[in-house]
Length: 110
Image (cartoon, rainbow, N blue to C red; front, top):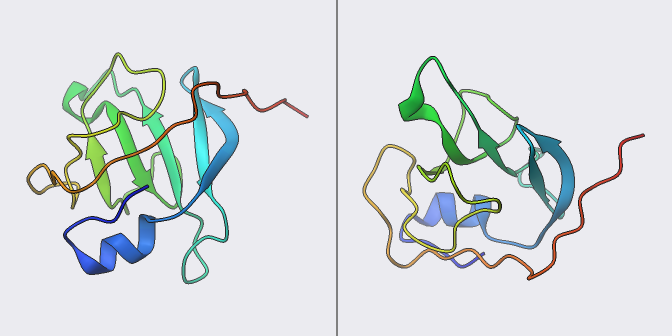
C-alpha cells in the first residue's frame, strides 16, 4: 500500500498485507503487525439492503463501524489499485494506491 494524503490514516493503513480469511467470496487481507493494537484489514462487503455500502473497505473488523478507506467496486475480486476514498467518506485520494500480487492464494479453512 502506498501512503495517502491523510497522515493519520496513512500511518494506519500503509504496510504489507497477507491473505487472511474469506468474506462474501473474496479474500480478506490483514496488515502485518497491525497498528496501535488494532488489526488492519482490507475486505469486501456485500450489503444487499444498502447497496451504497457494498465495496472494498479498510477497517479493524469485517463489517465494523470503524473504517478508514472505501472503494465502491462490486466487480473487483481483489482490492482495486486506485480511486479509493480516503477517508472513507471523503474524496478520492489520487496519491493512494494498492498493490495486489498477481496470484493471491486463498486462505485454507481450518
